[in-house]
Length: 115
Image (cartoon, rainbow, N blue to C red; front, side):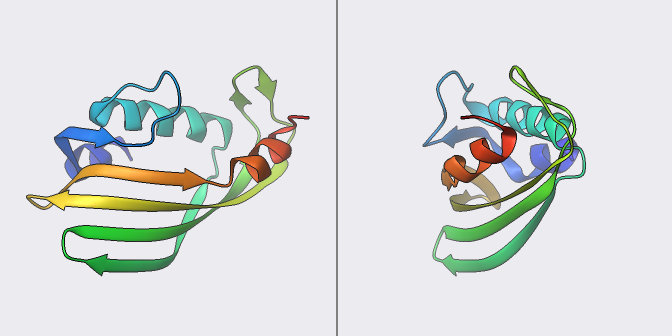
């Protein structure tokens, strides 16, 4: 939900590990989420683990759904999407100020049909 993302992300949010071409700030994260949710409309994200230490929160995430939309030049055929990711959030003033993230992109790209 974009309203929740805007409420959670600091106005000066920084993505410390952005893919090439992604905008900084809350808008970059929101646009990326919107694009992926268009590709996988039934996307679910389960928080498998969460560790809080000082101003950092580490979340181990499990994403799953079905690729029925479009991702770049690829059109989904209903294939199963199931991959993990880990995010480290820096919290400031009760909001996410920065994010370092890594996704299992090899698994994801295979599921999307990349060779």
